[in-house]
Image (tube, rainbow, N blue to C red):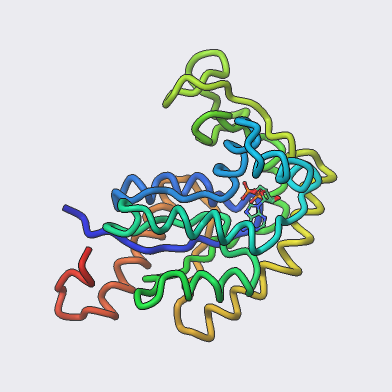
Length: 231
Ligand code: ADP
């Protein structure tokens, strides 16, 4: 059995974060914890959180650190993530969130933070053709649609263009990413927790790169080859 992992994946919108996180969660058999998916589910259900989140999301604005970390804290305290770990997607997005995440996990720590690097022009092209399942969040694109009539291959949900994938909201999110999220890369780098990988190429090729850097990080921490921690 593959040991679990506690992994954060960073990358600008369109870097392929969602796609890689789903693949890595299957590879390591750990939950994919996506703040965007959790918030979209809350909006769809019309919960109090969803009602508060919707206008922020439609504009491409960030929700408050407190609200996000409460949601993430709850998810990371459940038995599945505690037992085997998680692939965290969309959080942290600010240094304050990264600090709170560290506190949440203490005395454990992240195994690695992977930064998926892609040129902005490629990210914009991917976003323009991106389509997602409104139920499970599976990613498709105009050139890689589901098999049957925009119905999700995994869960049968409807596959649509995201409401916040308009040009204005995308540009705003990319700008926020540069200002608020990119500084996290230096923050994690200073802690020796970050590895950058090239996010250009097919999903399979990028996944292999990610798995390789995770395995290298395991080796650095446990050169004897023993499994790490309790997982
Ligand atoms: P993207 O990476 O394309 O911006 P996500 O699906 O990760 O999309 O997030 C969608 C929206 O949900 C964000 O634009 C923001 O409004 C909100 N959101 C998600 N994660 C966070 C977070 N960690 N902090 C603040 N807001 C968040």
